[in-house]
Amino acid sequence: MKENNIMPDSNLHQKWTVTTVIGLGLIGGSMALRLKELRLTNKVLGVDANEVHGRIALDSGIIDEYISMNEAVPRSQLIIIATPVNSIPDILNKILNESEQQVIVDMGSTKAGICHSVSGHGKRGRFVAAHPMWGTEFSGPLAATVESFSGKAAIICEAEKSDQDALQCAIHIFSALGMHILTMNPEEHDLHTAYVSHLAHITSFALANTVLEKEKEEKAIFELASAGFGSAVRLAKSNPDTWVPIFKENKEYLLDVLNEHMSQLRKFKSCLEKENWEYLHELITASNQIKKVLDKQIEVPFKAPEHLAI
Image 1 (cartoon, rainbow, N blue to C red):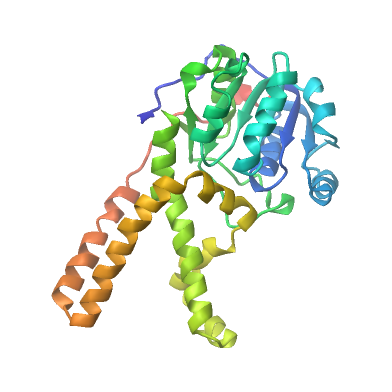
Image 2 (cartoon, rainbow, N blue to C red):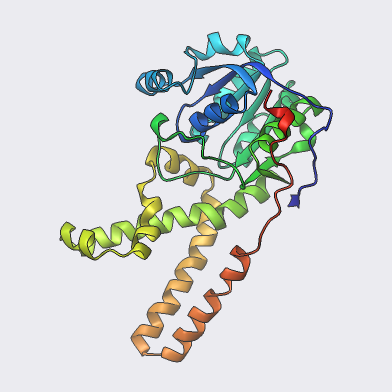
């Protein structure tokens, strides 16, 4: 993993007349709103298989037109794919087959399968494999917000396989959003996200199911749940249509980290069974070390320069 090793071209003053966003949920909708807020595009065309989502995005001002992908692609200079990860390879290959010099950037939470799907494509250079590490537990176009992305990491995979102008386009976008940029290979990306993102979601889903199975009184959950419980199960509100494909794509790395997670749970269970309070104290003390990692301040070198807001 390399941090902050690619810089936006200081002479680059980009604005895309027409941008297409495919997938009008939390990420795609928020990206559309932010590009419009920063005035980096004149018009956003929206594409979504769910017509209800498309109409909501149009009525909410997230997009300017709701049209088909076949209509949108030839009219666009920039195409952002923000659909569930299992659908991205087919969409990406279709666009590459039909596109000319458009820049295509995906937002997928897994990268190896997506990158492999276009590894031999003649227009591979027009594609930038990216993952902005921001999200909430909410979904759909009404979850889209301008309060998004800033201060978070944007990961770019296989940067060396993207054309220089396409890569600079992605850098320009993410730096304008106030994100810091990391580069890594797709497998490294999927491994790290299994540890720090995907496991957290599985754990939250499992915790919610555990409580719902054991505590049959909804009122008791509502009345007694602390802020800590709410925080721990927040991710359990996430959309299964988004997360099942992610878990499927990242199965091998997730199984590995789940084995370790279950091993850790067994240690806590054993302490309780054997009343080994000293070891329990050691386990909790060891876990406190995560605070040092999370409290480290990462400098964000790319803030939206004034010249970006044209």
